[in-house]
Length: 386
Image 1 (cartoon, rainbow, N blue to C red):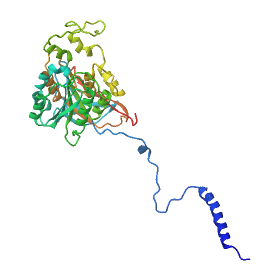
Image 2 (tube, one colour):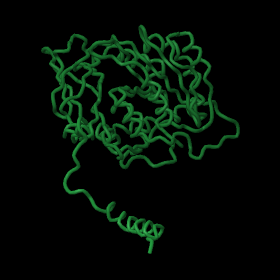
Image 3 (tube, rainbow, N blue to C red):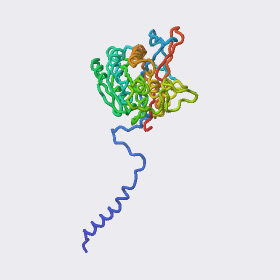
Image 4 (cartoon, rainbow, N blue to C red):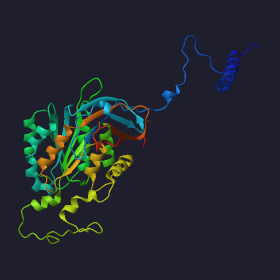
């Protein structure tokens, strides 16, 4: 009987089919030997396995005044001691009012302050002569319900003055925080000074009320970005109350309350007057602690003191125009301080990565008593995903 080769071939094929899965299911015993000549991959060292955030440069403006309020200009880098979270830092750049300024002029044009607009239109020459300074540049942004970039950065004083002279009242909205976010973003691209190269001081100047209505941005988030971008915020506080007092009387206008009487209750134990509305910051509120809280929690934790908090958090100053000072006088005073303060920079080392970093600046007054030192209180680095 001759063998059936077709049947034998089918048998072996079937046997191979049943054995194949068993072969694939078996794992090799022990480690797989590397291909000869191929490098063996090593696990990353512990220092690389941890996520690091490196802040390249921290700049803080430092204003030093004597007991009479006069600014001190006789100090040098050796007179300053600076710590970041308590760790001493090496100052890599030091200057007294000399670094050129990149300035964003952020002006409210809400219809609520329409009576003040003519005074604001006259401030262009003050900005160009006393705030921009030699080699400075500026941009002009206005805001109400919308944010409008009227003039990009330029060193042409005539363009700045002409732009400000042509601002007009807009809608009744005041998207203050959104406008601040735009200003900070514009300044982030301006060059900063390092130990080797000159740069620009990034300054945001607000001419505004403290109110915000309708912004998508949160004050704490904006101030975090401003701190990390080394943007210093100054503010000229406007007042709707003053605007109403300056406004010409309208026919057949009936006030909800008699002149000099306010519809909302005053602070307990106080008599409400026009000036008390603007001086509530002196009512015992710790604005520095409030500024730190807002930064740490990145939220809108303030309603009446947003301008003061923004300036304290970044090392600037806030001046109100409600009482005697004119807008021009206040801007001139801020310009004088801006070009008479110290600019101190360092690269943080040994002070940790994420969270709030407290900055402290101590000054050797060279025998001058009663020195008052003002600098930004710190900055915040958020952990990924937080």
